[in-house]
Each structure stands twice: as structure tokens, then as C-alpha cells.
Image 1: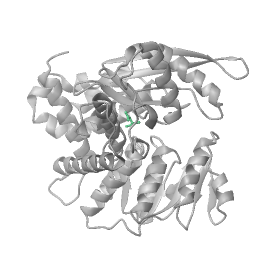
Image 2 (image 1 turned 90 degrees about the horizontal axis):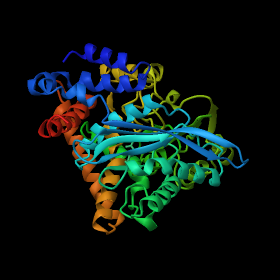
Image 3 (image 1 turned 180 degrees about the vertical axis):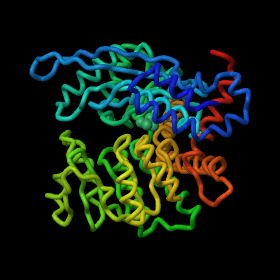
Image 4 (image 1 turned 135 degrees about the horizontal axis):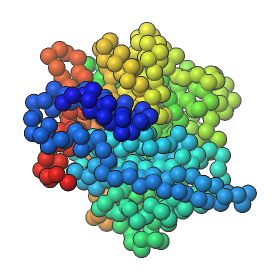
Length: 445
Ligand code: 2IT
């Protein structure tokens, strides 16, 4: 495999898709050795086939806002790869959404889903619609208009969307409601549903809980105790909320959260009713964290800054791709950080990741750390197919086992001759091998 040739061909075909190219490059660099040990992969053009999505749907979403004006957004669904199961992955509603970001997310999702041990392929979708400041009625009308177009292309055994940034239980409710009306069936098709209509217990918490189970495994492998450690979290949405909840429960002290407006430093730790308050902040629809400092005066709001300036033991980016750059990585390392785990997808820039690995910082990539979210979606699919509901304990136990298994897979492929565990390599090789073998078995399609 000639990585540079593959990347330049891809760039020529898809100019300007920087996030997608970044995600592909990271995987190619990780798998190069293994790939070259398998000439059958090269012969079957596995990589050339893997870097092009199976198909992409792009559509116009026209809807009427509360003023009676017509709004036009773009909608997408990238069905990336279904070698190991139906396309599975979230929908993101955010102003930054474009084809590059959804292709990178769908590509990552393919390997992440392979790591979960469950039979799910990779997909991703969404819209450049920004929920910020929109009324409930506007959100509903947008979701309905989005679904009028997408419903034909999804189904319980073909493509199962879920939430992501800007798409939570409320949006899934509106999307699924319209889907059911059009498709005239009640077979799941979405995950992240409300508990009353087929949702799974623990799904809302799953990404953050799973991430902390994974971090615990990383620390255990180095005989480090999570108890008493200080943690910087970015973001304040569903994923950050789950991470803060579990980190606190396990005895760590979370001292930051952040929003597009800046970050909060709370030296007393974000615990108890402060965690509940995060939900209130999110539900306000304003997309800001500044009010936290008014409510809890011992905390400080730093406008337009990121939490990586604080001296902490553990950093957990939980917001969006490339939110932690080289400067941030240098600051964290200079301040003595022990562990950095991406909870957001591709939360760190390529340069930041390279530095963490060069400096032998305990670092793990999003596709391993945050896989608990989609894994629990897989468990929701199983419950829907069996027409039953598992208890919270049962789901949490399965989630915990899955995260331990993902950690094992990372160790298997990420442990070189030295003591340092390269989780980026481990996750990419483990995920890739499963997808590649499934593709080989199913011929040229
Ligand atoms: O990035 C992700 O893994 C998600 N947004 C969750 C996807 C899912 O299908 O639960």
C-alpha cells in the first residue's frame, strides 16, 4: 500500500474534504504494516473500496419557521459500509455539517462499530440545520421535513440512525414519529428512542459511561487509580453529561465543562445538582455555559477559551472534532497530564495526537473510547427485535463488558515491543481487520 498515492488520489477526487482525509490518513498510517502482511487485501483493493462510501443521499429540506418564512437546509445520509451489518450511526444537526464531516464520521463509525463486537455497519447523516435558538415547533417541523425525504432509505435491517450533536431524545421522537407514519411499521429503525416507545435504558448515559469504563481500563493497565484525579471535560451536552456523571461516581473530580461561549472552571468539582443543572443548560437551547458561573459563584467563566488551559490529570474532549489542537496538547503535557481520551469523534487534531504518542502520554481515540454509545444502540436494536426491555443493570453490565473487550482488542494490536500502548494503532487495526475480513468473504460488491 502506498499511503501517499491513495491519499492524493482521494484528495483529487474529493478536494477540500479535509476532515475526511484526516480520518483516512490516521487509519492508513496505523494499518500499513498489517495491510502489507496480507497481499490478498491489496489484490482485492480493500482500501480503495473502503475509502469510498457505498452511497450518499443528499437532499433539500424546506420548512416553515415560526415567522412564516421558508427556510432551506441540506440533508444527508452517508451509507458508508455494511460489510458486518446494517448501516448504523447518528444524525448530526449542526451549522458545521457538510459532506466532509459526515464522510469522516461515517468512515470512523465503520471501524468503531466493528470494535463493539456487534453486527453493525457504518453510516452517518445529518443537516446544516442549527437547533440553536429554535422553538420546539420549529424543531418538530424541521425533523418532519427531514424525514419526508430520508424515510425511504432507512429501515431496521438496512440503516438505523440515532442521535449525535443537536439530535437528542426529543429530535429522535419527532423523526421516528414521522418515519412510522410514512413507513407504517413499528420495528425500531432508530435508536436513542424514548423509553415509552422502544428505547433502551442507559442509552442516554451510554457514551459517557462507556468512555469512563474505557478510561478506567487504560489507567488500570498502568496501575493508576482514577479516584481523586482531576478531570477536564469539554462540552456540556449529552455525552459530557454522561462522562461527568460517571467520572464523579468513580471518585474523580471534574473541574471543567465548556460551550461555544467559553469554559467553566469549578474548583469544587461538578457533582450532585450541578450535573443535573447541565441538563437545564442544554435544554435552554441557548448553547452557552456562562450561566453556570452565576448559579455557582465559586466557579469561574472564561470567555472564548478552552478548558485545556487548566492543570488536570485527565482530559476528556466531549464536544466536537478537532477541538484540541497542538497548542492545547503542549499546554496539557506541560501541566503534567496523565491521560487524554477522545470522547468526541476525532476530538484532537492529527498534530495533537502525534505529540501525545511521541511523549508517551496515555492517549486513546474516539472510535474506541466513545463506542459505548453505539454499542448500547446495538443493544437497543436487539431488545426491539426481541420485543423485550432489559433492566438498567443488564444493559450497563453488557456495556461494561463491551468496553473491556474493546480495550482488550486495542491492547492486542496496539502493544509493540515497548511498554507503551498505542491505542490509535490498536483500535484502527482491530476495527480494520474485522471489516476487511468481512469484505473479503463477501466478494467484489
Ligand atoms: O458517534 C456515534 O457513535 C454516535 N453518535 C452514536 C451512533 C449510534 O448509532 O448510536
